[in-house]
Length: 426
Ligand code: SDX
Image 1 (tube, rainbow, N blue to C red):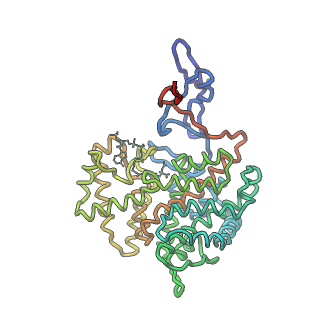
Image 2 (spheres, protein in one colour):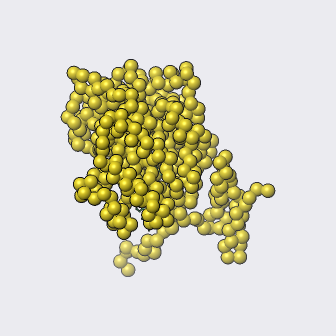
Image 3 (cartoon, helix red, strand yellow):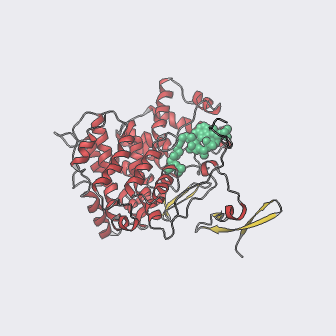
């Protein structure tokens, strides 16, 4: 017999069906609640609210499981490159050999930016924050592709494949451009003979007189970083993309809004905040214990720790922690911040304040150290997160745009302002 949930209000009992996902997650379907009872639910931060049914990513926060289209993140981290994972997240399957070459060909040929966008780029101050530039450039880019940004869903979906390849390709070019501008260096054009991540590093660090040739270890580490960031259920930025998509807006406008949401230090901005935190601890000669005490007093946040969903170790943090140690060994670097991070982690994982609140390292705790080891400047860390998350945003936009009976996202509220009054003089 199907499970039902009963809500008793006064002398009335209301029954609501329980829906179950393929991983046995259960939800009470309350879509009739207000029309039945006149009541709504209240769930500040939506920690108990499912906004959609999705086939893309599954997280079990209690046991630290993360799967893209059913495949465990550990397997993908070990055996797949970022573009294969991007294809899996967007289209539901890893590409076969021919499909892979078609996919990377489409992405490779779309790396350059329209000269009009290059001119627009020159109007930003050189020290403009890369996330501000990225958000506006992605939306403005849509002006050059009116066939993909008609806001007529059927029409926009016809061009979805090219729009997806274009955004995945160009988000990387824009990111590199923001760095070159900040450094006052000329822009380096993308090459058509380099792999996705290698091409990004080329655009970031090559000089007109000599090409930057990263080691395999560096390319693989950055590719792994992007794989681990590809999607993550209905996090703040992905839910923003779906919110914007639900109104019928095109893919470019939706991912541009996603960039804005990701920028916040509690979300994608945390990778930058973690390194800043570690640097400040290092500068004060603190081994981290004073900082931990301050966090327990509520005076500081242990950035890179805690998660709305993971109440266990974020599997991405484990993989990234190993990758940082591997890359530093390969590059023969010794980063004092890594030692501080490891001490913070050990201390926090044995301290009741963190244990009782189930606060574990999340994806951002080690990711910044990995980017730092590769030579990516701190200001670019959140942009790197956006490059990685682009496939997830694209896949979620498509789920909304292609839904049979999609409804616009329009949550309710409880009004708590001044009761009715007049501005008219009596
Ligand atoms: C990402 O959603 C996703 O999937 C996001 C992400 C993705 O891939 O898209 O995984 C990427 O955004 C990871 C999170 C990056 N943010 C940080 O690392 C910032 C530091 N973390 C926190 O701000 C916090 O843990 C959040 C924002 C991540 C989660 O916040 P919640 O779920 O709203 O938890 P909360 O703020 O209600 O905290 C519960 C308790 C509070 O203590 P009490 O009031 O019960 O005494 O835990 C404490 C908080 O003070 N707490 C922390 C803490 N995080 C929570 N105390 C110290 N340091 C922390 N980091």
